Length: 424
Image (cartoon, rainbow, N blue to C red; front, side, top):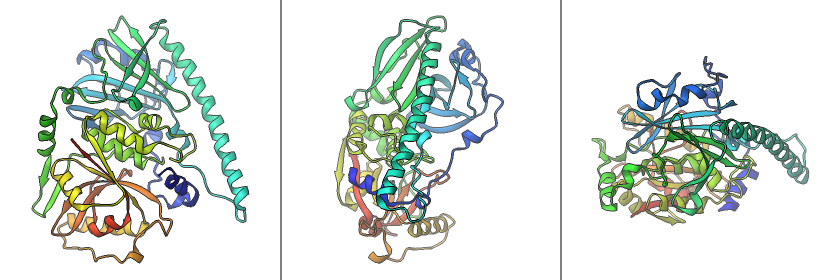
């Protein structure tokens, strides 16, 4: 499967990918941009609920009984400019602040594969490698400077940090350096994943967690969790059997469809994971592509961290998908993608949502993407099905498409390369 991602890197031009959307955060004008919020975010009133978080916040996909939102600003924290400030609340009380200072996925985006006309294959490979090396050197410089400055700022609170870990599954284990802010009664955990991700997590002292699984799920047995998942299945008058609590986690301008769809399922199953950390755990390289990563191992690790098993098949079995959905379990499919089919999915889905009777005609094999056509490999999350219409209902990780869409069962069966279903 690594070869498939490498194939995508070499053969698909940048403009062919549909999710080239920059996040609004980088362009948002906020009075907090550049302001140092260290004292504000460490204030006791913020953590006991007597004071509100500063600024404007955008709701994010939460986990279990915890809500999530990110700050629409890029302030400084501990003297370093933050890329993203994310807040986790439970029962409206602040539980964790997660602040990202450097992230390779955001920096590299998609690899620029636009080449001058007439460039031969060998020269093209050399030119692309030159671009990669230049970006790596730039990022390493930015990362190293932020890392030094951040650690210096943290040592003002605690000059003898300790080691700590989070994650029960070996491949998902995060190694932190833990600084104690004794006066505020807080613990600040520094994740420094060299040349990939620089982040701190702030929690109240004695409220540290060891697993990525939400505390409300840790307390339940498997049978109780399965019952709660099954209760999430909805059935509509139009014949849909649907998991409508799976939320989109947009990937932005990054080659992360396989990661973000996994995050969407992981959060639905109760795991506090995000695509940036999974890129570290999955051994993503700083190349602007998923080539060389251990995606299959990552999928298995996420299932184990959620205390479930993972079935992986190289084909598509609709009855297995139906059983999974009825049990409250989403299914991830890696499939071959085509822009014309994608537009058709949107048109038919929109017409159905508006009360129309639009139906798919059975597509010919010639009309469908395939390996033979060197079609891009793409990941989607199946969240439902409709037996009468012979359709699956699916979600993407693309910005601006938050509603599930529909495609024929025959199409996903023809275009699927791998199907991942979770089970007890």
